[in-house]
Length: 306
Image (tube, rainbow, N blue to C red; front, side):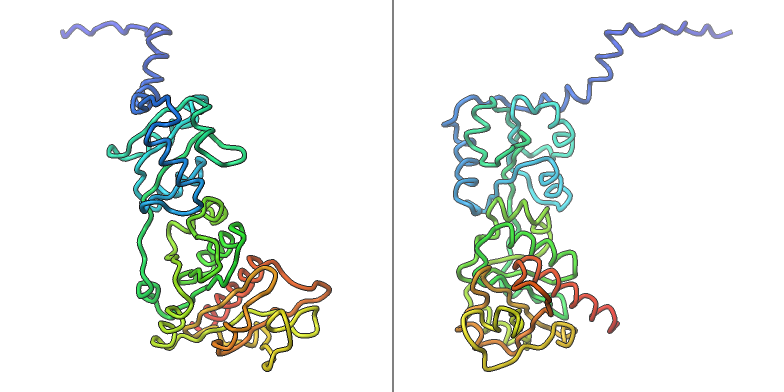
């Protein structure tokens, strides 16, 4: 008869060691970096301070945003962990590929590089996806949302978020618009910028591409008789259509203008149609809110037409 080995109870210390093995394994990936002039720290600081991607790298901060980047299959080049946040960083470390670098920074060094007002203690340099103007029209029928001189990064981020939520095929920023890789824009997009094709281009290049592809250019404007005008700074020779009366089923590009002035007079001369959101009791809507309403209406019309 085969003798069975008696069961041995684990000592408390052994149990705790086994329980913490995954955490210890993850923590071992963190490479200590102590100086504010370290090359990686300087690279992170530069990406945050310039408000745009640097060498095709975007700086992001916060657990949720980094997880969105990982889920969107973006390459995390370097993960930066604040000393006091190393416990919170475990779930991120477990999701990183083996090729990603991960560094541990003293609190003061991390804070010197990250511009977030209330940082969570975890930041990353992410390789951004590349898009060109032609790639924006691979999905038909096109529904392009165009930021025309939108200066607030929060508004542009909201616009990008709504564009993904309501089925837009791409988003474009033209002259005068804040960079779409501005850290505040990326944060306001809540990760949508990692998945939706977004780029910045010149107005003339965009208009030429829209014309070549027979994509209608529509300007979102303030309604007449409601404290504004179709162009924001004077009378318009054309009355705008109500949003619900505009045809948004076919290929179209919706131009959303500057927060204060709206779509410029010069740009309006290139528009095929003016479209207005009916309003009562308020003079105007926030650019991000107005774009979201217009995108929802486009989705509604397209769903009904199927």
